[in-house]
Image (tube, rainbow, N blue to C red; front, side, top):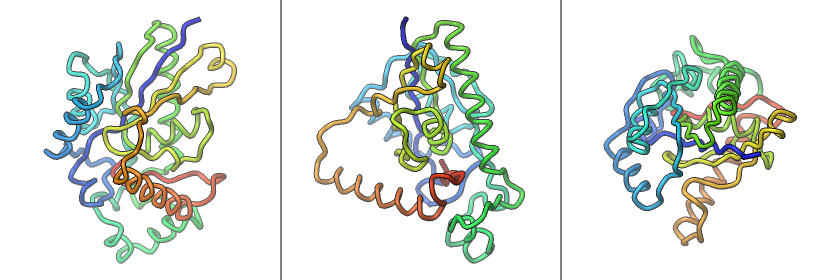
Length: 243
């Protein structure tokens, strides 16, 4: 029985990424630097060939899909959209720390906090995972064996933390804009256990330069800090800013 490949790819850089703002429901486009970096990554490391492209409805994801897979018309999956940060939208952590004491409680992970006027993170994870299961079911029924999902960082981490093997915590799946992971769906295993092998990164792993080792160490520190801020693995993780 043939397996199915799903490539989860995070959208390119936006101005919100570069400014450290919490951008969820705000429909920001890619910034010019983000477009250039995506094209550069595509030239240096061709993205996996796929037969179907699924995308969040948000502009930054649709623009990413057009750059990476111009020959495909992305199928929009509404529930792959980013979390709504409500009153916290378009603000930095420094601003929110001064304006809203609930933000610090959210950061410290001591209690469940929903951004004022925003979306509960647990519900966001549930709708994202339900949408992913629907996509997988459609691929199995239609025998679409290779697909790309253009997503937000938080959406990717929700899917990988829920279904990915080897098992890892939510923030262990953090990745850079334009990067991602390839999952292998084996129908019999999926039907029985709803898990999938994460077998490769996008771009593929390679020997690290000293600069890349430093970047990875910085990312590891960020993951450790995020785990500390958002609680232990038995707590529901919060979404990544402008993910």
